[in-house]
Amino acid sequence: MGLFSKRPKRIFSIGSSVCLTLGLVLGAGNTAHAHQPIMDMAPRWSNGYGIQTRVEHANSETTTWLEGVYTFKPSVRMTLKIPTVDGETGDAILAVPLKRYVNKGAFTSNWGITPSVRMPTGGGSDWDAGLSVSYSSETRDFYQLYDVYALGDGRGLDINIGSVHANGKGSSWFTLWDVSAFDSDSGQRILTGPVVVYFKRNLVLRAEYKFSAYDNDDDWKGDFFSFGIGIVY
Amino acid sequence: MFTKITAAALLIMLLSSPAFSQNYVVNVHGIVCEFCTYGVAKNVRKLDFIDKTQFEDGVKVDIDNQMVYVAVRKDAALKQDVLFEAIESGGYKPVKIWSINDAGEKTELK
Image (cartoon, rainbow over all chains, first blue to last red; front, side, top):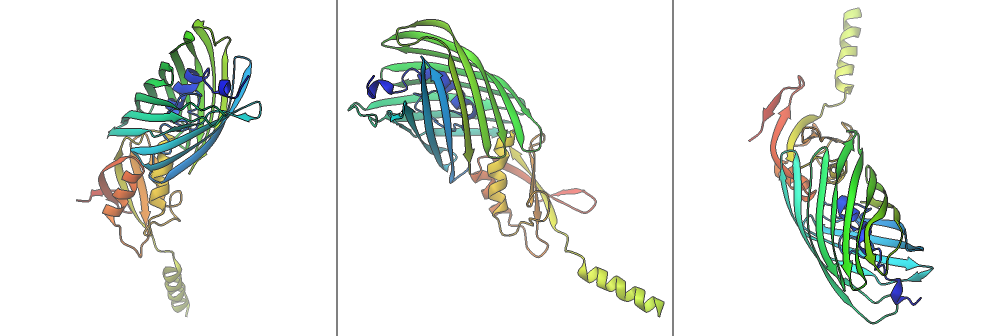
């Protein structure tokens, strides 16, 4: 298997939703998802930055992601995701999430547009462009995210919906349900499953599991697992 | 003699007692999650008029009511525009601010 094939293509849709979901560190769930590699929502503050590592297992292959984010101001941030498979670096994804926030009372939401590019750092020569359009909102108890995206020859839809359990002392749990639909030259698939995210101050942990609800994708088989840990400043 | 000693002791106690900080509370729209509070609190703590001996390093966030409590040093003055700017750069929208007296009563600042 060449490096080029190690692009996280397969992972693409999977974690993505989650990514967005928390924007957090864990946002990573999907490998190929170009946007908000790390934090879709955090760091939301000007000059904030963060790093996370995430391990994904799918298609009998384990991918380790190293991801970073820098927030110039709440509406503009930059993210970089670098995958490693079997010790070899794959194609990195650079993205620029642009957001328009609305804060009103006990409600916050945002529309996002994220241009991205997948670079041939894994040894190939192809550059892939990507774009995503997303919406997410959050209250004290509820979180939802919808994201439509395309990157290279793939396109997908991610939905994350669930509850938020905050303890009022700096930590909280997100228990979400993820639905990820993905279409590419190799076919279509829909994966779905639970996502759990834990925040403590500026530390974030995330775990997810997804199974195939529909699979007509020649490049995909089996379930998907992901675990990540990240920190923001 | 006893009266003089008592008076001297009281005077020493008064002079040595720490200065009380001035507390304020800001209504901040959108601040609904624990993770949201980190960036706002981080920005506010950097301000030179914050009394870090109060609350949690000078700041306390109540996400149930979207309120951010800040303690200002007794020997400093609140700079409302600077405080609001720090909260906005944290990603949220400050809309109102009140001072809080020792009895816990709030007075809105204009």
